[in-house]
Image (cartoon, rainbow, N blue to C red; front, side, top):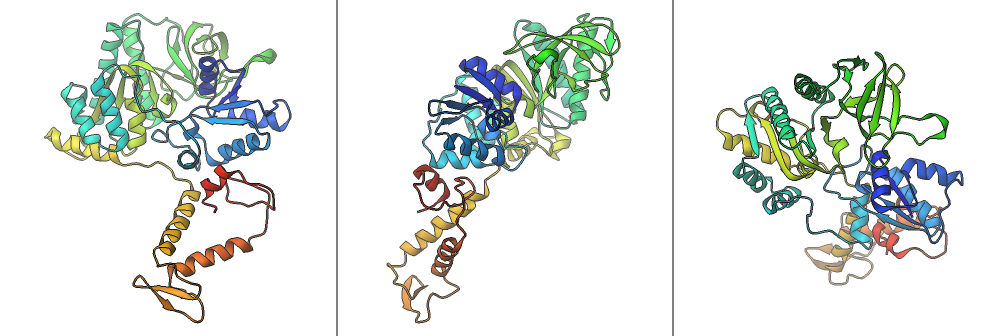
Length: 436
């Protein structure tokens, strides 16, 4: 069994949780298979986690490779969460036409009301969800975003001190600049409490330095000497020691815990990890979470990820200046609900093509079994001696069929609507494409 995911940290986590024989990023799997360093066979099972975040290019290549080798491919993901950075939407299309199993019960949240609120956000009913958070004193509206950020960091500090054994994380769907400000503010709380060392290491381009005791996250892979496994993008860690202004030692957390040395003069892709962007947080499970949302970036997918990370409780922070309201909270909350209910999930172009073909099928079936040479006119067949009327739906359907038959025959590619010369088609692939 081989585990894979787009993000390295997700692939590592999958390998540890599912106890796969190997785990690696999807790019690495495709590269290794192409160079025969990884062999896919009939008895190989490839499990891809966070598959909804896979862009069409990589997901289609993985499907093709596993199909060629007759390996089994299992895709695990949630299209209600974040879409790929590149062109995507293919996972949602595949789940509509391939055999699948769906999880219908939420187990992460301890409180039943919060499970129900998560389902409401997912379904686009944010008004009811926010009402539940407000009723449980988990929704906080301030005048400005800066005030919301300051309140969130203060609450984070209080909650982490109350539950030192648990993990508390702050989340934002805004810019890296805001993320840096949140992390710097959190670091100041820890420094004032005497929890950090005195020595500091520089971090180029960051508005803060790093100290022993700081929590950090790797934002790019760190390659290790001597053939050791690299530290994956998204890996969390704690600064153990500062040697000088550029050299420090980090204890990593997660599936492959180890001690690594970092020279920030050569590798600067680190960030304080008290607050994270929602894109880094997908797949994360924590005890408590605090989410700063409501800006122009907020939509259903980002909000759904931000609100579903914590087992025990999640607090929501937003500001009236982001929501274009002053004074009364009901109006601000309604504006926030409208933002959260807006979905920006990607759809694969093949979805629109298949839908169009099915619509034409339905139109043809509703015309009382028209004979060749007839057209559609007010739902009744009428004679058309010179062939189908170019303005009719039947003409569009026949033209599409004719055009498809005239396409040059190419190698099979079940995800790009190309056809093969002879041979058997995989029925599931044909259904996905709308091929009859």
